[in-house]
Image (tube, one colour):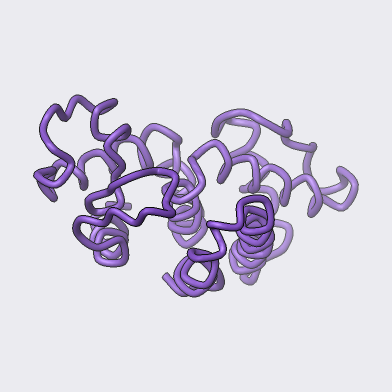
Length: 182
C-alpha cells in the first residue's frame, strides 16, 4: 500500500504554518515540528519547510520505520489508523495501543499468544494480527480500529485533564482523529 493518499490527507488536515501559543510542540508546518524537521536534517526555517520534505518525513518516520507498511499488507485500514495515531501520539504509542487491544481480544490466549506489551512491530505482533483477523472474520479490522479509537479518545481526554492548555485542542483531536473522522 502506497501511503501517499494518507500523507496528502494528513497534510491537508494539519495545514500550513501554525504557531499556537498553547501548543507545547511549538511552531509546525504541515504538522511537522521544528524538532522533527531538524532530526530529519532540515536546517532552514520551519516556515520554509517544503511540502515534499514533510511528505518524505511522514513516509519514512511514520509509515516505513514503525512498520505500518507491514500491517497494511494484511489490514490497510488498520495501518491507516496506526499511521494517523502515530503522527499525533508517536508511533510507539500507536503500537502500544494495538498491543494492548490484541492482548485484551485474544480470549485469554485461546486465539493467539499475548503480544508483548511494548516494542516495535515484530513477527509475533503481525502473527497476532493475522490470527485475530482469521479468527474473527470480516468485521475484525473494524473492531480493532474502534478499540484503538476508544483508547486514543481516552488518552486525549487525559491529556486535557493533566494540562489545562490542551483543552484548547481536545475538540479538534476528537473531531479529526477519532472515530473515522480522517
